Length: 98
Image 1: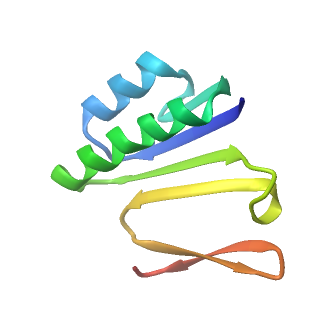
Image 2: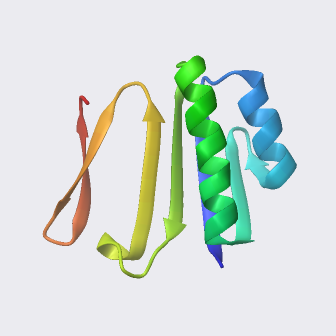
Image 3: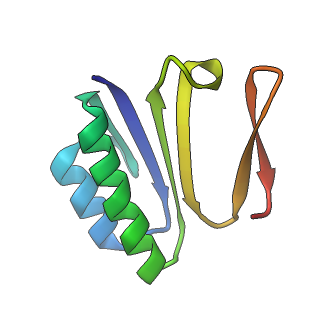
């Protein structure tokens, strides 16, 4: 289990309510869970993805520890402005555009 952080921006209230029910809101729109399993993390992200598909407003970024990933960090994002994550020389680079 690893620390998971989710940051939202300009999303519908139901996203914030759901996240606050499964994570601690440490600052406005910033949620953390110190020991979230991979299965729970994937289910939470699945809900966020489904909701964002039907209500594509704002953005959501999720960060978690993943030893095998670039820089030891797993990243996922939804929303605008669209970003593509690219690995270059062992680092994540975010490029605007889908």
